Image (cartoon, rainbow, N blue to C red; front, side, top):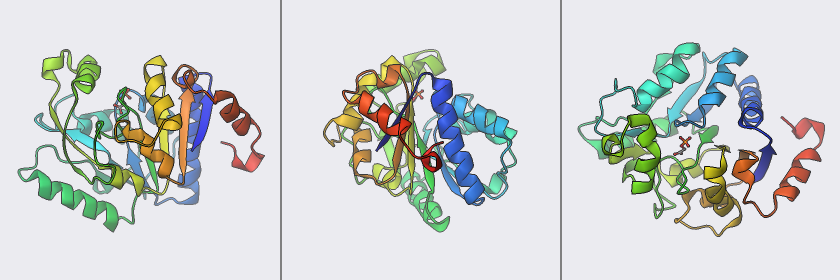
Length: 256
Ligand code: PGA
């Protein structure tokens, strides 16, 4: 894992945006895995401002709620349209988001996996992290080998996401999410976390044991993971000085 600690969310986002911009420059038809939630909003704003060419890019989103219509303002279809897709030149046929309204959810999940494989796999997956360590909506005790499937949200996640819906009761109980096994097959993972509320989950994920109790900890088993943090999210890392030193000492061609 490469831990990149920056003073502010804006600076940590800038590093992540430059990593993505470099990938699109090297591979204009890259396959990107996208995330939702408050964390990547800044990143999408930064990518839009960079005015990149998305015409050959394919995207796969991590997850979607079950039980709210696609047009609901808090659906991840709406989120992606509002925060990224309507501002860039991506082809609508290249956009993939799990279908929370499919009549046959298991079949739709299997089809999602097939579409990822048919696109050649995900080159770079953007990830946030839940306060309980979830990635995608893979809650604690998710199988580390799981594939795209239905999941039930924890009480903690529903409390965390109540800020988007107005109240906890309005947050759906069920979601479709890429599995941890799916995420682990991405060629590169890029995890972003900001704020003190993420500090414990990040410390467990980066420095704790690999355990399904903190699903993000499985990323320790992935060969190419970058973790972009602001200082508050890094505040419980016992080796933060080492990570800063590693990043500051990198040769110029390895920096972003
Ligand atoms: P947040 O959510 O970006 O809204 O904090 C992250 C997540 O739940 O993965």
